[in-house]
Amino acid sequence: MKQQAILEIENVCKSYHDGDVTTQVLKNVNLTVYSGEQLAIVGSSGSGKSTLLHIMGTLDKPTSGKAMLEGEDLYQATAARKNQIRNQDLGFIYQFHHLLPEFSAVENVAMPALIQGVNRSHALEKAKKLLVRVGLSHRLNHIPAELSGGERQRVAIVRALINSPKLVLADEPTGNLDAKSGETIYQLIQELAEQLGTAFVVVTHDNQLASKMDRQLQMKDGSLQETTLQHNELAVEGAN
Image 1 (cartoon, one colour):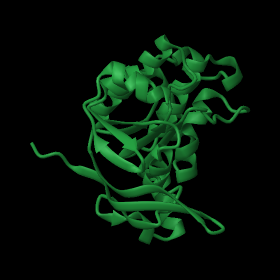
Image 2: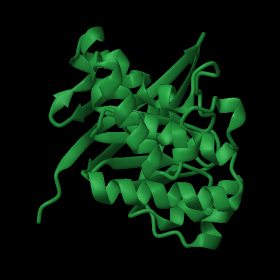
Image 3: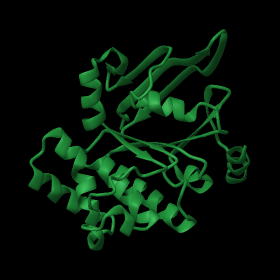
């Protein structure tokens, strides 16, 4: 069965200018992300991984090239349309969970749906079901300060899924977690990708996480390459 392309990156370049100095961060990057795929992007610090992720998520604009979400050019869209895409079609997970400290776990998860205009009781019910699904039924009404690091990150992941996005972009999602919590996060990503058909693009230095993804790409000197790096090689690359 032919895979469905969700996101297509075509000849994307990104440069920054500081006076007369130009720094090229991305150089003619091409990438296709498919439905339900788990994709890891590895590489040394400063190689352009996070910049590419931000361009995928319309949080940064390429100097040249295209980013297409199911055939729609993200950077030809109006500001209002980009906001709609970020709310409905994309999900975001960060190393720092960015949960709202004064709201409970269930309220944090429901927030993107409430922003979308979903009825409050329906949004909270869906948020509750997602939290139960990831083993947090006993933490629904706890605020972030009352949760462990792994629990907070699970809340952040299901918050990214509340509006059933086509693609979730994750920047170092296990960066602040111990090995056991990191493994739990990987298993959750795998389960949700398989069951919901959600694609995940994960920028990571977590060698264990990267080695288990469907596909691994290496960012080096602004270019993206398919890689067959083994675990020990990933460890060397991630340490740079």
